[in-house]
Length: 221
Image (cartoon, rainbow, N blue to C red):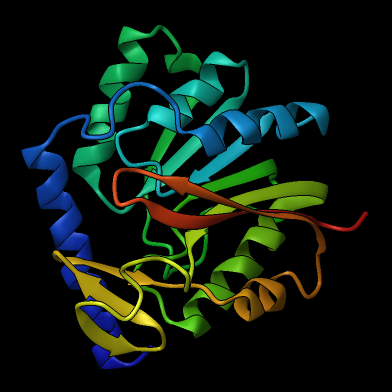
């Protein structure tokens, strides 16, 4: 990782920590549509242990727990995860939720084949270089069991904010203080190179709206 990449990532980490402090529960209590879809996919695959990357204050992790999954929720914001734990207690799902402060630029804190499914909503399209995204995908594959499922969403190059704001290179653009790595379809396909690519579905979210892909891929058995 270059000093420039490290610097941008650290700035974004501090930014998110501040945002969660200013706006507790900023995304509300209802799960995202991708999480509802993922829960159905995970259930059909017989998954029990789910890892969520970039869980924030936990609306999706808590939904997975309410659906009966055992969830490890990770995020690089201790403030967000504290809000998640408080909500888990209020919803009486504490026994099914574990949290860990983790920066996805580092190896995942799990053994090989430790989980059945991984979910990441708009985490891979944070301020990560292409090299870091590939490293993270390799880590996700390492911690998934054979046949395990990875569902992730990313903003793509058809999004209105692509090439808007401050450019950082490597298809990373910063708008309103948030840096986003916008995905080309080639990057999606490259990440799925050693996986079974099940689906790439386009959808929109929010008022702009953001334009995203929901990607489902599995580890070959």
